[in-house]
Amino acid sequence: MISKISGGVCAPKGFRAGGVHCGIRKNKIKRDLALIVSDVRCHAAGVYTTNLVKGAPILVTKRHLEDGYAQAVVVNSGNANTCNPDGEEIAEATCALVERYAGIPANDVIIASTGVIGLKLSVEPFAYGMPMAVDDLTSDWSGSRHAAEAIMTTDTVLKETAYEFELDGKTCRIGAIAKGVGMICPNMATLLLFVTTDVAISSQMLQKALAQDIRNSVNMLSVDSDTSTNDTFCILANGLAGNAEIVSEGPSFTAFRRALKKVTTELCRMLAADGEGATKLIECNVKGARTSKDAHLAAKAVVCSNLVKAMIFGADANGGRVLCALGYSGARLDPKGIDVDFRSKSGVVPVYRSGVNVPFSEEFAKSVLSEKEISIDVRLHDGSARATAWGCDLTYDYVKINGDYRT
Image 1 (cartoon, rainbow, N blue to C red):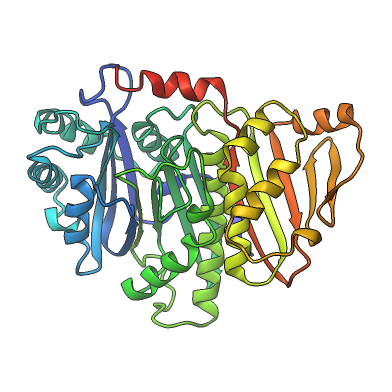
Image 2 (cartoon, rainbow, N blue to C red):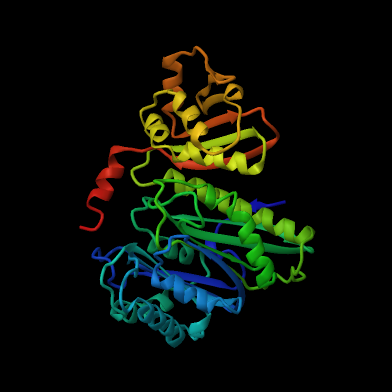
């Protein structure tokens, strides 16, 4: 039994979090420095952007996680610390500040940054803000919310969640915060997402769980088909729940994976719904594909299609755009065996059967596509594999936001 709870990253035992304004962002009331710490050293794992141009914090974090351990996460918004000549030195100096003020070894600190690429950065704001960030640390829900606010860029709402479940008769918890909204394409970990858990699990099994999860979660998320330079998805597990340590596959590992999936699926929906300029969440469900690979390719293509995204924005039931995306997706499929429905809380509109359009009421279809959450259901009749992907509509505001993002 997995139950939704409050608390975010502070829900698991032994975790505290906080967020403050340190001066990186011009807006003086906007939090821009987040800190998450565990009372004890954690097993840790991470995945990162596949972009060849990587932010300096990723290079530092990879080094720090070589031994599979971490105890803190520090994140700033407003500056990506990417393409800076002294970026790695600033990142390492920031980790040293965590050691100085929080007492956690610098090598046990995960660091991430989000914001403008190529913008000059110095260590001064971190030196100013770190004592305040440490003072702001709390195990209360407010700590998680402060941290979630501090990592937001053009996000309009903070993103966090937490769940409770049992392992070996012990109550276990898992929580997370995330930010996204732009430069999100179905690729490895295209966002910032930090998960905390009090489950006892080895670093190797944590990495395995993460690698398995991202295939059906963050890798199936798209906002604008741009892969960021700073994407980071990390998990810290401190073992304070007291369950028998998970060191191999089995019932406990499966239960942990289910809880992780709950967290990442919920956050993916939140990230898609809050895409830059977005007004609607798009979920594409593909069933009946030959293989899992075919199902994933098909679902990704639909949510990535700018024509589909624009069609959803305009509430224009042009199902041919879905078939078009399926046709170039790379998935093996029979064009004469494709069924497509548009679905929302207002009802279901069948638009294609066996690859041929079917008559429908334009007025009813518009009401269905005018809701905030739209499902595009695709049946391929080629096999039994399925996949789900998430995206958002493409609006005028996306261009406005990114037209002057830096200035």
